[in-house]
Image (cartoon, rainbow, N blue to C red; front, side, top):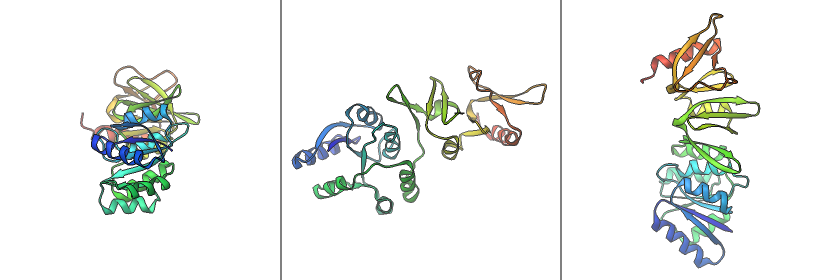
Length: 250
C-alpha cells in the first residue's frame, strides 16, 4: 500500500517511516507536518492509507480525516494517538484503526490491516464518545479538482443552491456538499438561520432593514450579497435573529 505519514513531530514521522521501510511491505509516498499539507499531498500522491496524528496545531487529525472524504478517492485512515483509555474505547467501538504512541511494529501492522475509509458519521461518533473536540475550523470545497480550505471565521453566509450549498466568504464563493442542516448543527453558536435557504454569520450582520411592504432583510459588513441571494428574514425566524443580535458582543 502507498502510505502518507502525518505528524507535527519530526521524530514521530521518522519512527513511522523507519518501521514501514523495515517491513518492506508498504511504500511511504511522503510525510506531512500538518493537516493542510496532508490534504494537499493526498490530492496529488493518492495514498492508500494516511497515518494521521490527532493532536496537531491548526487542523486536527479528526478534522483532516473529514476533509480527506472530499477527495475523489478518499484514503483509508489510521490515527496515531497518545489519548487516554477513555478515548481508545471510542475508537474500538467504531472499529476505527489507531496506534498508541510510542508506536510498536506489531501494532502498526495490525492497524494497517484494520485501515478503512471513514465517513463523517463515524468520525463524529468517535469525537462524541471520546470527548475530543471535533468542530471544524475550516470548510472544504473542491475547486477545479483541488481542495480549497476556507476558514470558518471568514464565512459570511451559507446559501442553499439546489442539491448543493454555496459558501460565501471574504475570498469569493464555492459550492460544498454540506447541507444547511449539518452546518447549523455544527456551527449554530456562530451562525443564525434567517430562512430555510440561508444561514448567516452573526458577526457579519450590521443591521436589519425593513421595507415598505414589511419585509425585513439583513445588511452585511463590506459588500452586499449577490443579487440572487436576497437575504430576507422569514417571519418565523425574525425573533430568533433579533435575539441573537441583541446577545452578541461586537
